[in-house]
Image 1 (cartoon, rainbow, N blue to C red):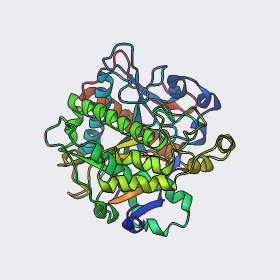
Image 2 (image 1 turned 60 degrees about the vertical axis):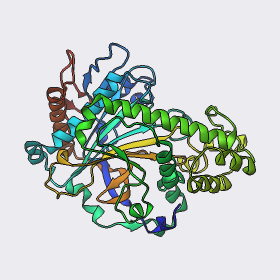
Image 3 (image 1 turned 135 degrees about the horizontal axis):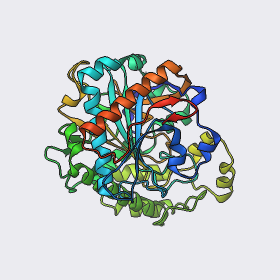
Image 4 (image 1 turned 180 degrees about the vertical axis):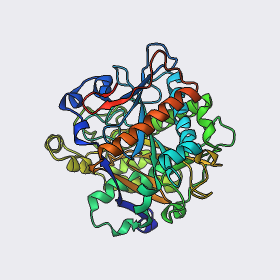
Length: 435
């Protein structure tokens, strides 16, 4: 971690979001269901045709554990796990990102801003990718390619007027979860790994590293790709960029794993590859071609990592989630992608008019919190969303459903998404859900 990290503004306790009304909580049958459509069935707002034949299935879903009052999820929902951008058809990815652009347009239109009290709010589109971690708690718990559509109102963001400093947190385990060892180092490594890779979008660029700006709260935490605006999400070139980005992160993760352990493939469940001797790790890291600063950071990380013996892994298998997340690494590639526009033009400026959008790449080694729950808001580079604090009232939940249904109708009408013969469903009641 850079020396300034302790002074970085954080909000790890402030942003609390209620959970679902008790009557709409996930049933044990839904929790245990083997197929996405079985897990989602009471929460499916619309089933969409991505134009990819029968190989992929897309569902617009009301989330069982909200990250904001006004949020929902677009998820691939076929029977086979498809966790990465490479596992779905290009048409599916294009539909997903067009839906994200439609969400930005929806919350920017005056009639919706007035109807749902959206002025002064902020937005994130978040995608997590963690295909190989299938034992401990993961950044991507459900192994479907999906996108979180997240909007926080000004009222929800009010507690973020007060921020803390990372160095003041006395809980070492919490600090390592929310400031993962790869938080700063991973951003540098990804940035260097992207050198020479064409972005394929006019006006897009990988921003130079500025650790001091992150620590001062002037930039999000992660590797930043600046996009010229939200409209690029509607281009096939953006879907192609996400594919290339995933391939580069996957390649980078595999190379680092080989440098640290000598193994190319992810380990079996409830095991982790043994580390090579430190001198050998140093030798291999120095041959990867990173800058001296990045290589030095990897060497410092290697010096602090410890092997996880089979006996310890077996104990952790039955331990509390916090212990697993503290002691067991995630398997690579593991990262989150967030799309977020800095607030520069005042609280009443429509988000769609932002003249620059950050595509934020954050790599993970220990942190099981994904990009929908750990992100930048209000100029604070690290905000934790604390979900399930109390419960929404039935009235508030139905207001949320009104927002979701209005967006679904808008997206189908405006973004060129083909719903086939499907219609946008209604939230009938909590027992039957959306029908």
